Amino acid sequence: MKVAEDRLRLASLHLKQAAVAARATQPQYRATVSRAYYAMYHAARAATYLSYGGDDHEKHSDLPVKFPADFPDSEFWRNRLKLARLDRNRADYDPYPNGDLSFKHSAKEWLQDARVLVKKTRAYLGSKI
Image 1 (cartoon, rainbow, N blue to C red):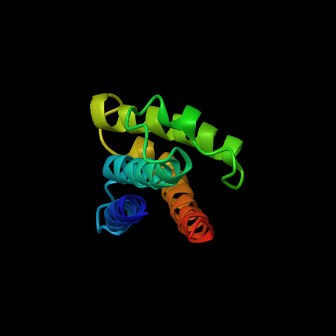
Image 2: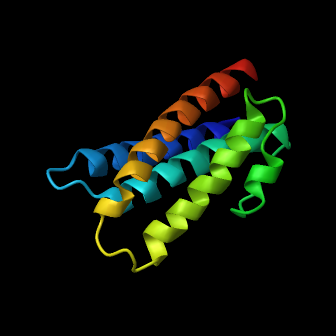
Image 3: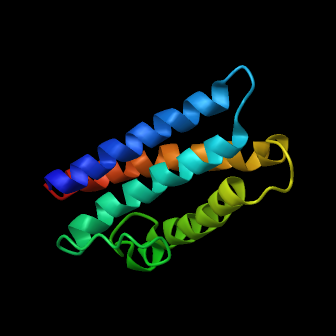
């Protein structure tokens, strides 16, 4: 359980960093997308860790497939993790489009999803104690 709690704590740290990037005087939308994805990723790893008895499926492409079936709205979150990863890859690696502004909408979307997933994961872990 401690490992899952530590993963959730890391998810919360990434969520905080995403929110700070989004609220900056000059918002950093690429950074928001990236940090929001990692908040979702680590929240999902926390839930998966409990569900699979310690095997938390670190590989980004495996994680959505192994997301716990008993997690609330698990299919929805599996799909959201896949889509968030694609956007995170664009934000982190693609030089085009230049700048941050084109990521404004997705930054807000992923930040909101990250908030919800971290909250739901906290409740999920609590239900497993």
